[in-house]
Image (tube, rainbow over all chains, first blue to last red; front, side, top):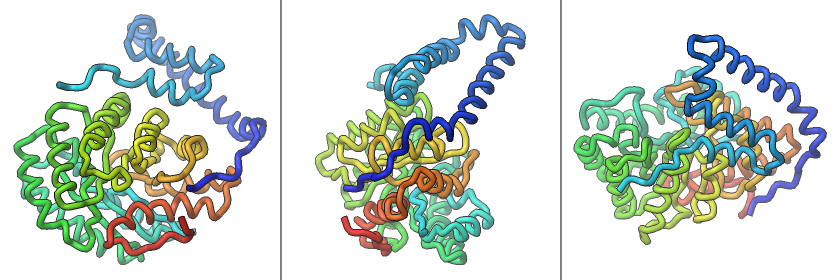
Length: 84
Length: 272
């Protein structure tokens, strides 16, 4: 059974990731602004089912949840029944 | 450092990609049968495609010192047409003894439809009947969790199928448990956009442990690259994992899964 021996500490992970996280947050903000500026933007931001799902995702990101990536995946997954 | 790319669609790549892989240390690849970038109009097209996979691509790879193996099937994207699929499936059994064929794949689901499930079950039947390894394609994006659950349910209900001879590919954070906890191998497919990135791939290796996981680049007709395998290894090394751990993930793991076929010649660098 393979096991990994090295796990970095949290501060060093944040040091490495922070600029990219900052860049991703700005990219998302600009994406939302671009949609908002387009014709019908306010309605799409508020009502489009994809945006409704993304709002749930953003709320999860702000929580203290563990396994955020897995939970985001489930929010964005098809939950309809299997075919007969 | 030597690498194996266990899932790459070389037919869609240029010779520059082969050169890149050779320079980066890739010594072997396995290429599942998949979509051609368009829906094919006849079984004869698949016959030509299989000849390309078995005879042409190994020669192209050998020019760069890369050992090339293949898998045969009709892929899930074209399996909606059951009649055509059945004509293609008939072409497969006579080719299974070819020295470059590792098994049946990549079979699975794309949009999780009834027709896709029918064709998937018929190809599992071929694999079981001919004692072949199986490489599974799971759907992408919102269809992945449901599709992976359906696929593994079908496989678990067939008592002829040994899970350790099946690799469930394109696993992500929400599906890797489904594969691993049922005894299957799991594949991580690393893309530059829209799917698992090198960073998230390493997160999954650290969170779930690297046993029975094969990392690949897919390198298909979409935005993708053979460099994704190498970039993931570089990120893994940057995080402080040892050269032995790198070899364990990026060379030994595929050797162990593929080594269940007597046709696969490379051996793991470390013991079990």
